[in-house]
Image 1 (spheres, rainbow, N blue to C red):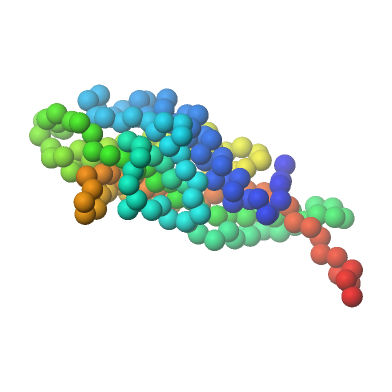
Image 2 (cartoon, one colour):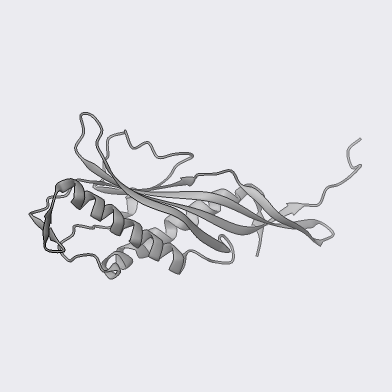
Length: 192
């Protein structure tokens, strides 16, 4: 069932957050990360909807946090008459999901029989956080009210160092999500 175009983007963001809050904690252990790799799911209150790009230069209050925001403008890709008082449309919008995480207490870490550095551990964590987000959204995000389809556009992980702060990590994924929305039929000549 389509809903108003006016609430389209906020509904997608809310759906992504709800799905990640409900399922990421069970998907992370199932992605096949090395057992000794520290990958805690964010606490329920560490998921944030923000209007634009994540401000990762602000102090992190949580050990792991997720930021979800529109990364492109919304675009109508199809419009059709659905009756005497309503147009239906299919719209798409870019959505970014950022997992920001702090340095973890990690002992010597062996990966493929090689000891890796702290920065390499953070990069590995970013890779597995992305894998968890991707698995979770692909499995659970689609529903008839909010998201009809989603395409993973890109994903990357990075080690973040900001002057005066501890080392941190960032896992970023970018998505195109589509949904059905409704528009009012133009009332030509109704206002003179």
